[in-house]
Image (cartoon, one colour):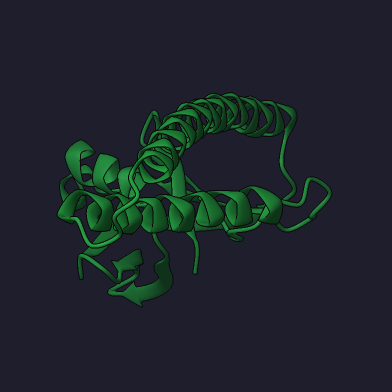
Length: 181
């Protein structure tokens, strides 16, 4: 059970590369499963179906069957409930570690996602800082209004007290969030 990473057609042969694990460990000796389908029947699967398998990002189940002297690689996907049967004369399977190109691609993807994550964190942090400044200004305004008014039963005083209470709660939530990081 794994994830179809890529495929290639070389002459009359189809080669499918499957990643076996969801977690990345660079030194894992059984990270990749390669399926070489020798003299495969091109009518048993289309390029579009192979592209669907590559773009399918969840587990797929691989089974080998033999019928009437021909071998079949059956690939079943769970979420979209598709089944692909690829007929061939012979089938060679090999388990291997990551090669240099695959490791480079993984590292570049991690670097790209790390850059995007850093940019997103910066944007959220910037938003939080602006929000804190706005809330602090609102808190100061409400406190000044309350200091200037002597009567405590006026509607504007009650609204200011309620807003000040809400602003204080929001500031406490933001402060608590910042300390958890």
